[in-house]
Length: 129
Image (cartoon, rainbow, N blue to C red; front, side, top):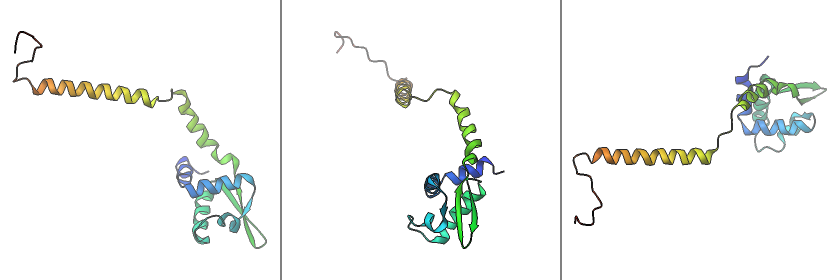
């Protein structure tokens, strides 16, 4: 049984993800899989080998033609692993950015105060010019 590392490594490549999307429709001959890509049949074969080793597809020979089939249960372990992160609240990136800006602004103010220790603090005194 392939491990999660193989699964995610196979899914990391956009060409392989596109191949999987194509195989969602139906089984396909290797030559049909290769057709929409601007690469050699040998390059597509390497992608198919990685997908096969990851257990995401299977290949079988029917006469002279090699067919590729999506293995629908292959992503189950990866899906279960990813769903375990669903228990956490999604990160609100805008709020996080505001937090970082506030922290950075505070840090800059503190840095300015520390750098001016040898200078007297300025006081807004209208009588003092």
